[in-house]
Image 1 (cartoon, helix red, strand yellow):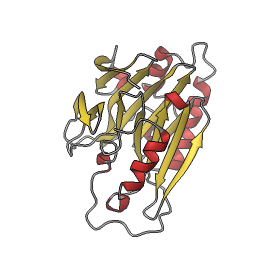
Image 2: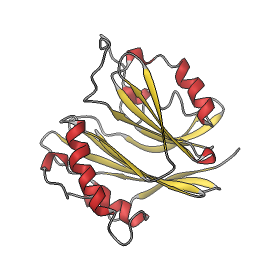
Image 3: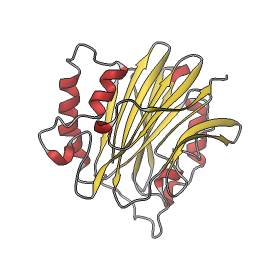
Length: 244
């Protein structure tokens, strides 16, 4: 249950993500630097020890969305593990090729369906992997701005209503800038209340906003714990210097 925006640049990218979650769930920990294999990684941590977003010292970013509308061909696991554990298991990868090897070794059968988006600045590549309980499918997107949407109410309706709001927002004079991204992710501009980008449903709301800004030198993380519509400025949450 999220909205993800990726704005690539010639020398990096800006990524923004809302996390929509049940209000009853425990509060997540803000981003911290962790050692994963041979790479340093920066990500927030949920109650199960996993995460929905992260980056590493190669500038690679990963973001995970639940896949709610999938027509799965396999049987769901009897005891499913938190999908948030997927990203920490993969964040030591520095390239698309390394990532393919890592995800090939990851046994997804214990996870419910998900979509995983990877941003690889050195290769100017955006790749999406989808797990439908039977197989992992891969799709490469152009190095261009793109949005993804997930909602427990309906992924398709979230795509429809949030997509319409994003499309209108791209007509604004400062479209694609960081201030524009923050306004977009704090937006209540949608025809249907339950599919607004900044969610305020009875049991579900947008509980955090995370922003990654990748340059040739470093990846900076900014984080706001709470509804994006309430933030004045996300707080600095760490930085990783990029290494080859």
